Image: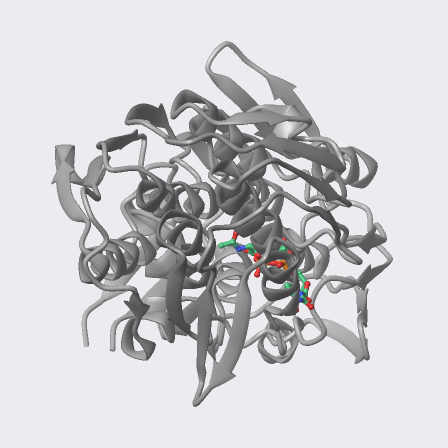
Length: 421
Ligand code: UD1
């Protein structure tokens, strides 16, 4: 298995082009199942999760054409020829559950393996299933599979989510586009990826209002059509690379970045003493002279501080002045990076969903390993300013979510390389 070697190497300078959002692409791609006309996605990130989704959709009957080195994907599902999303594919990626709503809406049947994905907690899919049941779907769980049917099609319904789940909002939003009547989703997730999905569905002929707010209303239509849609900027990749100059020093311009994708995160950087400036091409992050100040962070659904940037923020706070408290409220087991950062010399106390970080002078390079995507990248960031060599193994996690990570960071002067096993 490949690993990544980072040597702490002083200030960074240069620019990084931010890719299309993985999490948006993973919900836009299953939208192909809602129409028999081609859906063309541009600005697609080149990641292993995208390949897995292509594989999943192909197994259901979608013709997949990949162009421009993977940045354009044309998905054509003239007919769904197989309604079973198999365990072998679904176990690799939890977002596979997003084929459930579209298949059920189009053909009144879907069989989807219960998902796997990152090891960051139990991550049930009960809200997806309850929502589809409220719309007239019948759900049975048998031998690790979800069997969903809707003999007379799905019907519009009012769905109240007890928690603003991103995936459940996406699944129900897609299903509702072809349901009979009006669906209202209350306490809907408001992430930019949801707005991007709604934008794409509208181009396909869907009638959707309120996306980006807690109440989304969908008027079902008879049929959806083909469309072309660019994937929105990846705000998590953006936030990750914004922290690189915070940790290593220097100044980096993030092409395609916008503050409104990450306002709560930018506010925390400001509080820590980091200036973020919008430019014509994106935004610039410059570290001030000296150390950042410790800050307290509570992860929340959008527009709050994203859980997907908690590990990277923790890496930055390991060498901040004073004490920082990070509270994780979205996932119950998302501090697996803490023991690895401690191996690099960080001072972190974890109690339940709270981690207290006491800033130290410097981290030291070490061999480290992470069990999920964002935790892995937090260790790379920590390595950028650590003394000596950091070797991050299990690189396949990074390949799921960061395209050309080594190339992007080394172009800014980082001393980083991939070592093939
Ligand atoms: C999406 C993102 C992920 C991000 C997360 C929260 C994708 C592909 N992934 O994941 O990167 O970390 O949003 O911003 O877009 N829950 C339930 N029942 C459900 C659904 C969710 O209890 O039916 C719980 C989960 O266990 C978790 C919390 O709700 O604790 C958040 O989950 P959700 O918002 O659904 O995240 P995902 O869509 O899985």
